[in-house]
Image (cartoon, rainbow, N blue to C red):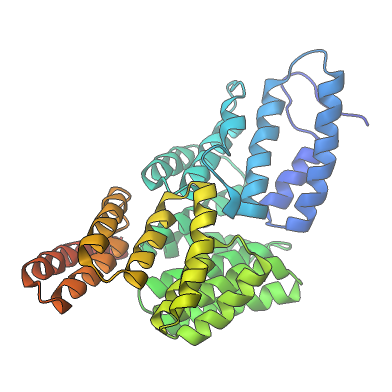
Length: 367
């Protein structure tokens, strides 16, 4: 194999092909180019007579982004360590990728304040990069804002990315991803018909491309859409398809537990709670640790003195990460539980705090 790498140059033909496949979200092509780049990397390690720190940093960055593309739910707190262990010589492009990918990593492990910090650092370095890189950034930043219950920011960034991708050949997967983010943002503001339309457009694109795995993630979003409207049976139908093919999809598993609980199917709910808790324990996912713990408490406990501390522990985390929608939702649920037990003083306190959180969330919705 002839590896072209001279002076301060750190890229190769296979690294560039790999990077392009990642940018266009072409999983099959990314897997092919990853194999080629990996062979090249192993050969370089064997024959290397001088070090090329920029090359090794670039390779490590692409390894992380490849994982984010192909198995994003498996990302843990340690997934970025291989990059942190690399030398980081001055290079504008790699500095941008470092900050951008670190933002993606923080978002994936639910450290949202740090994610915002690194998204802003990456955005400051975005000027001068290619249009597809800029569109890719706006799509990812949109997804982050969507999870933060800031649909206006999400819609602006997703629309900006979509505007570019729609003009490019080979970016159909990116278009479907932008449509999915737009759909989720429409759910946040209660525009359910628009959300369903966006998701169905995304599914149509992916079906034509025969992208089964990507279709499953859209079906997961449809499950969330129907769950948001209390259409539990329809939600379960979509979510079951997701979990059958992606058993590690803890977000779909949580929704399955939640929707079975709504229907009074407690054994089924507990089945999914047990699976989900095991998965998020292995991943160290703090956000969903609290979601599952609170759902389990309300599903199985009748004593409020056991439910209350579990909810309040979750509330502390959700406040810290500015996830006010969950603060409002869970405090209201706790307030109703106390009200039903005729404990009106605590019910009033939690209803009041829920209202404050709801107002904080509404300010986020308008951002």
